[in-house]
Length: 251
Ligand SMILES: NC(=O)c1ccc[n+]([C@@H]2O[C@H](COP(=O)([O-])OP(=O)(O)OC[C@H]3O[C@@H](n4cnc5c(N)ncnc54)[C@H](O)[C@@H]3O)[C@@H](O)[C@H]2O)c1
Image (cartoon, rainbow, N blue to C red):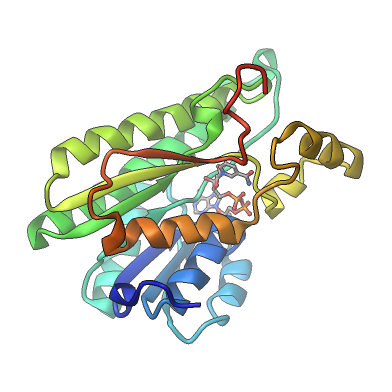
């Protein structure tokens, strides 16, 4: 369903686009007529995903925590599409662990992907968008980056970092380049499903005011809006899309 005609022909990179929120976002931009370049570290799933829409114009296997991989991804997109108009920096991982069980290796891995990867992709996009004096950078943070949640100390710290990275880049890149992040609450994606038994899913749903998880398509819809001209005054924003999860004091 195309809602934003101005997105037609825009060159869009989505990271973590082989699955979940990233895949739905890539599909949404493609259905708006944008030309989408998919980046993911999972070669097999990415190859399958890249065949799902005619407006998927390229894909690249890359680990966003590797500077070499990120630089190569943007170079490949430059070759194929001649540049970038919109970045949706979304790749991320989470590992449920008590804070006392988090090894420093795990801490660095989570930080390297969730925060380091966001920085590297945003930097490459910003270099291009600053010189062309236009562009939109969007990042997937989380409500885990705005409130404390047990068992995810490394993940939560990385997502809080994404919120401040967003705000800082928004200040530095205004007025030509807009930078925003989305803080989803619970979204039913493969990453999230992997953490649940059916009973856990029911219990979590009960605690969410909207009584359900978000669909990845609902996050994709917010990204399409944020990239559109209707969102032209949005920059430096962290938008919660959480079904009311963080509206009260005791979620
Ligand atoms: N699902 C949720 O409830 C939820 C809530 C808030 C935020 N998020 C965030 O949304 C983003 C997407 O999560 P999802 O739920 O769609 O998960 P997902 O596991 O379904 O998809 C994540 C994708 O990112 C890719 N990826 C992981 N590490 C990568 C790396 N180093 N380099 C490149 N690609 C990599 C994976 O291969 C996968 O295709 C993540 O940043 C996550 O933290 C998810």
